[in-house]
Amino acid sequence: MALFQSNNPVLKEDVFNKAPYATGDAMTIRGTVNKMSFLLIMLMAASVFSWGQYYRGSAVLPLVIGGAIGGFILALVIIFKKEWSPYLAPAYAIAEGLFLGAISAMYESQWHGIVLQAVGLTFGTFIAMLVLYRTGVIRATERFKSIIITATAGIAFFYLIAIVLRLFNIDMPFIHSSGTFGIIFSLVVVGVAALNLILDFDMIEQGAAHGAPKYYEWYASFGLMVTLVWLYLEILRLLSKLNRR
Image 1 (cartoon, rainbow, N blue to C red):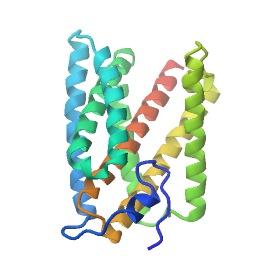
Image 2: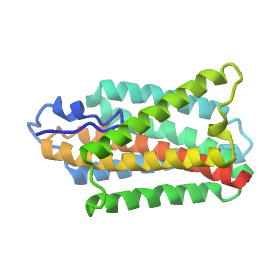
Image 3: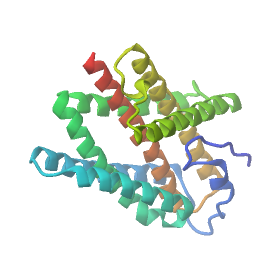
Image 4: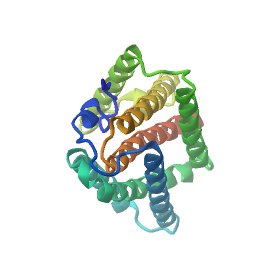
């Protein structure tokens, strides 16, 4: 079966091409949805905890740094050891939850209601993309994939440059600016992140059709969560820019 390449680094073409065919239970879409629901519950529970720590006046910087670094390390391990995903994907969800909860509380303390708006827009976008995908309004054609892959690579490269410049106390204006260009930049990034969902949905469907092993349900759920976390953070950043105006 010819599989295309998702621009989510977690859900690439060779992930399922190299996966052994399941000798027992195989990956299913329903099973992936169930795993994804569980991971979201874990993420939200950890977020509530770190959110509460912030408003109780406790130091949350260790949660932010620990969650970000821990999530990054766990993600790398999961990518290279996919068979460990049933055990590490929940840990990744918890780490990201600790990070997101504290960061979200910081935003909320400046702009009341911004987190609820960001959460609502994130899940609204998720549902909209799922409907567009299932109804065939947006299809993962080769041209579509090429555009999204190129755009995502460009954004990643831009952020990498921004991180390096930040080490020298130089800020990239588009990332943090609340001006017209800064808002346009955030809108473009949010749009690209949202379109990643289309490729991820299709890749999950292809994985189930390919007969990947059952543990790939955890791996695919983890990959989809990576996209959702990115989408939420970009929406939160966009809303903060709009509020600063």
